[in-house]
Length: 263
Image (tube, rainbow, N blue to C red; front, side, top):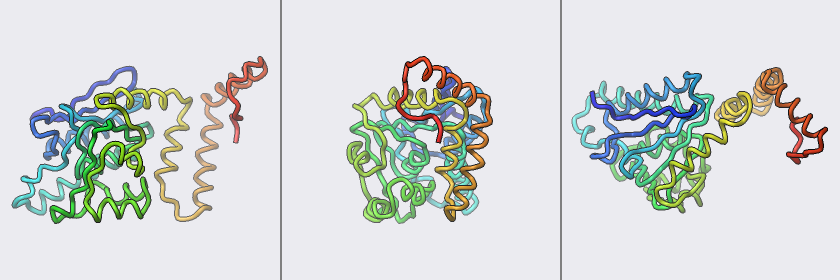
């Protein structure tokens, strides 16, 4: 089987590169399954502190290989969407940052994959494409729920019901992207993001991600979950050590932070 997902772990940061450049990294089933396997493994790898997801050859991905949909059986469709859903679930449930670095196109299912990430860094000349209705399809890869969560119901309707192509600047303005870079610089910026997040002490970052990704039915349940996570943080040795260092600096008059460390 061809290696459609390249993996590289350096200083605790795993880079996953979609690698089917002759087809602009279009998803075939092997790519979907390899990506799902890599993301699930990384989510549980204690040597991996964060993940950067990118594409080879100047494109993130043009989405699914549409010619594969011709005469596709129900079993094949289940396998296709099952692998896609594994990718999205692994990203959302990973207790570590997953940052997308988007150069060139991110279309269809690839846009959904990107939306699952915690942060989207895009080059100014990137293109986010939501072509589903033009093909007679509904959005997949979690695109509807992820886009509504990212940009709100109104903007999600605008982008999906009127099939849109967004430049990097337009993606930033609409809330789809979180950071814009010059062409060729998205990956470097994504690495900086992950390194910054990985530098925070303890597992508070991952716990905050979990809270953000949970759709609480009411405020009381959100407060209960907050209590559970905050207790675990405060009782951790990492927080206690960080607190001691913070207080020592305050007593020494260094005043490195204007904000209190406590709630």
